Length: 354
Ligand SMILES: [Zn+2]
Image (cartoon, rainbow, N blue to C red; front, side, top):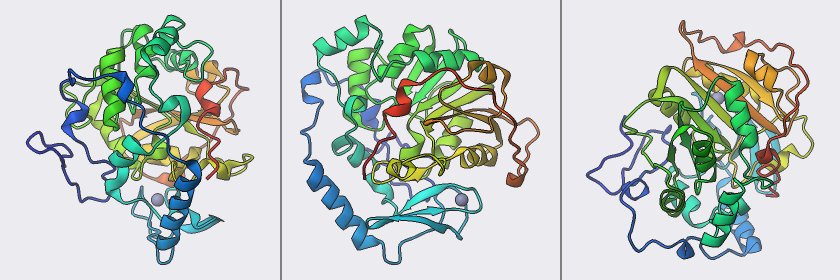
């Protein structure tokens, strides 16, 4: 199935697994009139935005579709109600998701004009960017030093190629490049993609036509935003080399974590814990090991699957299974040593209030 057609400005995809509408401007030539000053859309009143979300969900909650957005499961069960929304869990794949679900065609417009997540989405001025680059983002919540250490522990070493999926305005892609990786990037929001390309030299590509394969498919705090998460895994499988690895970071959706229900809502339609993450990987013939922050890099380097997994941030390292094992019930959890390394992202995307 093709998501992107160079002959059209938009491609309407009708399959339920398609998470995005993609348009060429995301990957096309840089607008010569581009200026970082136009990047930050006007900030929306958070109270009005919340009210709109509550009214939207109120109008849709009765009779809302509770089918699983990741697998064919139709027997999802209610986990928790929150205001005019509810969290359901699929017993087949263990994914938890918000009901009502988003319309498939809202992704680009939402991430272009409404999505606000502090440093993640606010493109800095030229002066601020130079300051951040001069310190390589050290001490900021976008310091990728831990992710780079994690990648190296997972066997993804400088010089290898990385596809940074969901790069926002390019802060992570830039740091990965500075660390010596051969980085290519994708971002759904056109203005942030243009900023990444223009201001940070990111090489923006289409997930549907990347033009090459990669040693690593990387994403940081992207999966929990997707309406149909399996589509990301499908892209990963298609762009990775046979011995390539998926490395993904996201908020830990373990229900025993304090205030875990603040991490799903409008911005995060999915709440994902280790078992669901491993199942997603398994479904496309990948085998994964999961970890939570602070990370024990020795465990990562040895591929030891965790058992505690109560940290704020969840990570998976997954490889293609040579002999596919499709039985989801066969996942086994082994002991994990104490973790050591705290990710800067682990606290930045886990404190949503609605
Ligand atoms: Zn499911």
